[in-house]
Structures are given as structure tokens and as C-alpha cells.
Length: 564
Image (cartoon, rainbow, N blue to C red; front, side, top):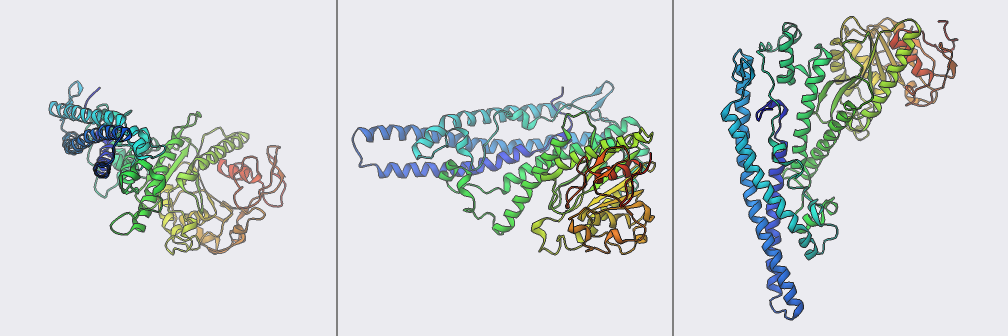
């Protein structure tokens, strides 16, 4: 175990958050001391037993506040010094990485990784200094908050809960070591520099196995987002980027969140602050929107992690993650996209978000993969299937309807998303059978993507589509029989024809059944009704989508099931 490990696994979020909260707490403690001094002056003419008891409690409380103020005053500079030294430590390790990547061996010896003595000493010094500062403040907080809340008559503010207005100053369970630990040292294998603006796939193909491992670990920002690289490498790199995104978003939320304005707000907690605080110097509305977006993206990151960490025996790969826009974007595969013979990419539509819907989308993908395997097996195909939930574009939301840039009634978001989707599809292995599945507004994005050509898509399936951005099937760049259209009863979107001609009316398209019918395997498929039931397990429509993915027989509108 090394005191100085892989820098990419470390991020400064805890220190950044703590610095912000300590600065707020410092001001609020000073405010509380001023109020206590004022109350002492007002009670100067009060006498008797009650006055003496109050004076004793006042003196005890003032002493504790003085001690806390002193500790907080010293914690602030300690955090600042620690941040500066951590920056130096990061620079030292990154310098070693660069030297290694260029053929040097700053942290790599004949017997494997070795540590820089200066870096180790610096890490230990930071650790000891923070440990002392945090321990003192934690101890004084524990002895202060309960009597302070009693004295001010703030219900429910005893203990750490009384500081809910700004959140905890520190997280005692994690400790300073958790905040500054850099992890286990990773062997730095020399990796040729990727060509600026060049062919990254060719660069990757030219690396040895050890160099690829090193590139994933040390260059995740290059490997993770690159369509065309192996799924296993992108998955591992993107998980590192997911960790970095979470740390950065924690710090952003802490910086933007509405804060207590007085020491009494601090004790009362955040509940009384809603709508009462105008935040920001450049307009409360703008900053509040930024805060809401940061909170949503942090929730999206955590929802993605929850999906990836499931223990259900399935392989999952994180093929894309991006939190730099106004919403989070991810692509998660159920199955191994490197090994699967059949790959489906599912593009959802209007109102879908990562934070709210990824778990459900993952469940739909898992069910579709299972059904596709069953369909393939019945025709003697025992090869594997992978299904990707592609939430990789700026999906219109209800609140966007009247905003011209993102409205669901316009093609702008679909056109912008189509470019990224086309690139993602081109990056899948060329020998796979690829099915693109688009639902609702996602079908418009899918149609515009395949119309760009050379995407490697073999079949396009559209569910409840308001239009594919095309008036003829030839505009899609696919033979008509490979465009499969499903429109359920009582689904008004499927007949809308808002973005080009109604897909079910395009000449030569394959119109698949959504009714109660006998399926090719002898079961009876249930009828789909409305706009959101196309991929419900047990429905005819789900069977048909799975059959297209697997290359198995489908059930068409108005026709009996085919014979196996």
C-alpha cells in the first residue's frame, strides 16, 4: 500500500466543500457571539436566583462559543494550507506520470512502483495537520450544539442535525485520511502520446496489453468518451470519470446551495430557508437554476452508479458519461458489447432523465435482452445479446416546451442528438447485427441518425413515433423492409406525423403487430395500449422488438404468426 497512489482516483471535492462550509460557520459563530453579548448587556439589571442561574449558563455557553470560534479560525487556514500542498503533491505525481508516459520512470523502478520520498513526506504532513484540526473542531461541536440549541429555543437542533442549514462542517466517519488518500500505486507503463486530432482507434490498436491497461487508468478522459474503442476499456475509463464527476458536483452543489444568513437560521436548519434567500450576486434566478441543475446531475451520477453496482449476475458496461451540459448523459449496456453478436441500442424520448429513469430503462434493457436470447435460441442461434440504454442526448423536458432551443415540438434536440448517436453506432464492432430502437421523440433522433449514413445499423425499430424526419423511406438510407414500425391502439403520438410523414405510411416499411395474438413460440402476446407500453414483458410488441434484435420471426399486422 502506498501513501501516494494514482492521482486520477483522487479529487479535491471534500477539501473544497469543507473550506466553503468552514467560512460560513466562522461568520455564523461570530454572529452568535455578538447576540450573546447583546443579551448579556440587556440582562445587566436582572437579579435573583434565576438571574444567577442564567448568568452561569451564559458564561458556560460563551466559553464554548469562544473555543469553537478559535478552532474554526485555525481550521480555515489549515484547510487552505492543505489545499496548496495537495496541489503540489498532485503536480509531483502528474510530473512523474508524464515522465513515465514519455519513456521515463520517475515512479517506476526495476522492481515495480516506487515512491517519491518528498511526496510521501508531504502526504503524511498534510494528513497529520488535518487530523489535528478536524479532531478539535469535531470535539467542540459535540459539546456545543445541544446547550446552544436549548439556550436559543430551537427545536430539533441538538447534535449535528442543528447544523443542517449549511450541512456538516466535516464528516467525522470519513476522517481526513479519506479526504486526502490517493489510493494504491499503479504501475506506470510507457504509453505513446495519442496523436492530437488523429486516429485514436489506430493509436489504441498499436498499444500493447500493458500499455492499454495504463492508458485506461491514466488517460480515462481520452479512452472513455472515444467511440470505436473496446467496450471493456471505455467502461473502466468511464467509471473513473464518473467518480471525478461525482466529486466535482458535490463541490459545485456545496458552493451554490442556499445558505443560512444568521446564526439562528443555522440552528433552525434548511427547512425555513426555502424561498427566503436570494442567492448570488449575478441574479438569484440564474444561480438557483445552476444549483438545481447541479443537484440533478449529482443525482444522475449516483443513479448511474446504483445501476452499475447491481448484483444480479449480469454484465454492465458504462459506455458514455457526460455531465458538462445542462443535463447528465450516459449510455449503459446490459451485456458485453465486445462479445455480443446482436446489439440493440434503445433511444428514449420526451421527459426521460438519467436521474429519474435510468433504473427503469436498465430493467427494460435487461428484459429485452432476455427475450431476444430466447427468440434467438428458438431458431438455433445461441450467440449472446447486449442491449444499450442510450441517454446520450439533451432530451426535451416538460419545462422546455415553450423554450425554442429544447422544445419537444421542434427538431433541434433530435438533430443535435443524432450526430452523437451516429458516431456511437459507428463505433460498435462492424461484424455485429445492430438494431436501433427509438421510442417517441427518441425515434426522431434515431431516424435522423441513420439518415446520416454509414452507421452500421441493420434494422431500425420505431415505437410510437411522431415522425422520423423523413417523408420517404429512401431518405433513411435503409431498405424499407428493415424499417419496423409499431403503433399501439390509443397512442396519439404514433399517428401524429409531426416530424415528417407518419412512419406507418412510408412505403414498404414493416408494420409489426401490437395486438393480442399467438406468438411464434406458442405463447399468447398481450395487446399494448397507449404510448408507454411497447416494451412491457409479455406483450406482442416486446416480442416483436426482441425478434428483430435476434433476427427471429416477427408477427406482422393482420397476419398469422409465422411457422418456425
